[in-house]
Image (tube, rainbow, N blue to C red; front, side, top):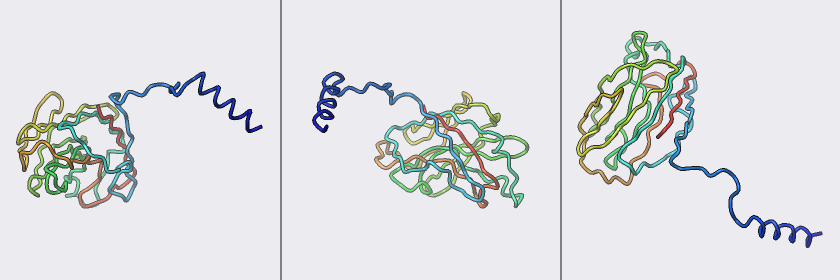
Length: 193
């Protein structure tokens, strides 16, 4: 019986070779990841350590109605939640990083440039987005600056270093807070391009 099994396996290898007969996956094809931040938590799922060797990050994001929230402490409504970006300058992200941020304030989903430069937090409001609609984002390192491109407008924020060849730049994923954790489950869909 074993001989018949081995002959069958050998004949299949001979006929099909070692070629993959399934669909070919193109590594340049955008992949969508749906992130969930659970009620009472800050961190999203799917947040494994992932290094980024390139100096730009392009993606689209979709927020659904779960992005609408009211903070327990009214001042915290101004806190900026984190969307997506990267650490920089071979440092921890609270020393050097750039990413997009967001919050729900005044009945609108507001988007921010959000950076750490030598441990100092720097942010700038960029505009608003519609719920359930994909919006494109680009974040690039250009010399000593971060360039945030949002809705066709570039916003430049100075970096804390000038090195471009970082070996330890890692992705920064969705995160809720500030001072308060997510008041309910929040879902954000991100497609990196």
